[in-house]
Image: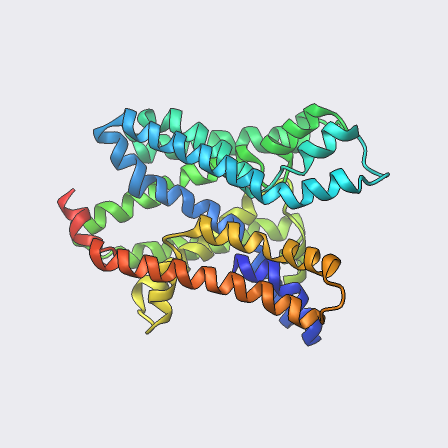
Length: 345
C-alpha cells in the first residue's frame, strides 16, 4: 500500500482513473503510513516488551541501535531532495538556507528515529505493566500533542523552532500523537502474545475491537466534517487527528485478522517475506523516482518508458534478492510458525 501510494499517482493518471475508483485507491495508499505506525506498537509488545522483561539493558541497546540506523536511513532518503535544494534553492522558501536544509530532512523515518529513541528509554518501565502503562502514557501523549498542535503552540514559519514544532506536534508525522497511538497498541500486541502462548484463538476478539474502532472513528470524524472518500484520503493528515487514527487502527486490525485467518497461496508467503525487511524495501523504493529524474537529465535522448522501466526493474531485482534471502532465512528459523516459540517463552 505504501509503495502504491508513492508510485500509484503516475499510473492512475496515465490510466485515466477518476471518481470513486481513484478516491478508493488513494484512500488505500493514504492509510499505509499510519497503519504501519500502529503496527509499530504491536511490534513493541511482541518483541521488545518481552525482551525488556528479561533484560532491560539489552532491549534498550537494541532499540537505540535501531533508532540510529533509522536516523541514518532518513538522511539517505532525504538526500535527493536536499541536493536539489542546494543546487536549485527556491526563491519562495522562507527561513533561509539552514531552515530549508532541515525542513527537507523531515519524513516518516524522522518520526521512527525519534519514536524508537524515546521508547528505548521507556521500555523497561512500560514492560513492568505494558497494558496499563501503554494505554495511559499513550493517551497522555495524544492529548498533549493534540492540545499543543491545535491550540497552545502557534506556528512560527521560517524559524528553527518551527522545525521542532513540525516534528513533535504539527507535522504529518507528529511524534506525540503517533507515538501515543503506537504505545496504546501495545495492549493489542500483549493480548495476541498471551493468547498465542496459551494456544487460544484471538481473532474473534480482535475482530470485535476492529469493528468498534472503525465505527467510532468514522462517527467522530463525521462530526469533524468528512463526507466522502475524497475527504478521507485528502484531509485530516497534519496534525494527525485521533478519530482518523482510530478508524485506521480498526482497518489495520481487521486486515491482520483476515490475513492470519485466510492463507492465500503465494500471496500470504509473499507478504510474510516482505514483512521481514520493510526498512530495506522502503529505502529502495524511495530512490526510484529520484533516479528517474536524474536519468531524464543525463540521458534525455532515451524514451521515458525505457527510463522508467530501467529504474523499476532495478528496484524489482533488488526486491527479488531480498525475498530470496528472507525465504532461506524463514526456512531455517521456523518463522512461518511462531506460535511454538511464543508458548515456550
